[in-house]
View 1 (cartoon, one colour):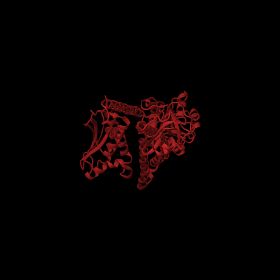
View 2: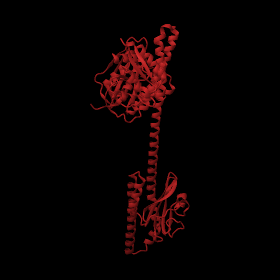
View 3: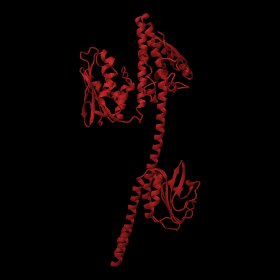
View 4: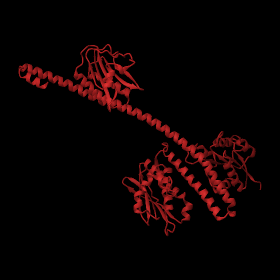
Length: 419
Length: 121
């Protein structure tokens, strides 16, 4: 086409040449205005993820692009194809839209249609000129956008191209809106499931705890009343029953803890870590005394962002492990809680003089956090998975430094709180 | 000295029996109530010094009973140990204001004995 223009230009007078140049410039100008209008509409559409709002944007702005007496979109609602009129008189609803010659065949073929002189479709029956453009995303038909005017032969291929550009923007906006809608409903369903699960966990815990309390109390009472009359072996077996029941109780408590960690009502606040660390030590008073373990909490531990009960649980888990791996004949058993800055976070350290961790075990130590259920370390149970969940909920990090035979320092780093 | 009275209110028959034995060992004269609907009448009748009360029971909950106790001035001063399934289950915070002590299950024999004696002497 350009070549033809160039050849014919040779034969034109200067005046005609000027006229042609002006006309071409005006056409280019008009086209560029329309293209920038498409962009404007695209930006406006992508500002929202609400389908109704997207349609309002088109109804208001598409007049910049094309002349039309009717503008509509055909989209799927609850599995049915339906027309939403955006501009012009409401069209009567058509029962079998998918079988229509204009909209139906564009949906099926995913090809645009330019109608010059009316179509046999009952949809847009009074309109001679029509542009029907499919809306597609990821090779799937989302529907069509339709422009129409009553006069015949009003639209050109250029008009269809402009409509096509608009359809690309509209398709992605519809796709995003649909994804958001799906996401919201999935989210709603998920939070319902979580609520159900929590209720279930509570029921289970309550139902499991009563028989467990029975075992523990009956065992202890039995021991209290009859232990003197029993041989040592029987007494040992009896303690093993009650201590297993206690262990199971701890695990149920920890399962409940895990369920509780989901609770968004537990707001994150500034936590005074000195008091929390001391409370965690207090839980083990008896065991610490029995093993003659020296303890200390640095008096200047900083304030961190968290939840007092959660952080106490983290300290308690690390202290419990430190006691467990202190070593039976340790000449100088100690556990100290200290701190340092780690990048912009407060790093709280639980340092012990226990048996330490072998280098080859260190690598796997943190794997244990993620696949605890396969690890049968005595007493570890759910403890470490609780620690991991708490720290990740608080946007923190966790780690360990250890020399085998000299002791370990477990640490967790949290955001600094405000005093 | 006359024995002090205690009432154990728990729908779990075996658990209630264990509590009865534990409190007996501390020197209490103990009545057991398994049907929570009968609890308040029994308390009014016996006027115990101490009650151990399960929170989650069918028909009438431990909290309902506790509120009834505190609202009736003839029994309002009774010492109440409330037993809950777990401290990690969210529950009505008012139990902490109304009960003299809240223990989560399973409390040990020693714990129950210590607290029972401490509350009533």
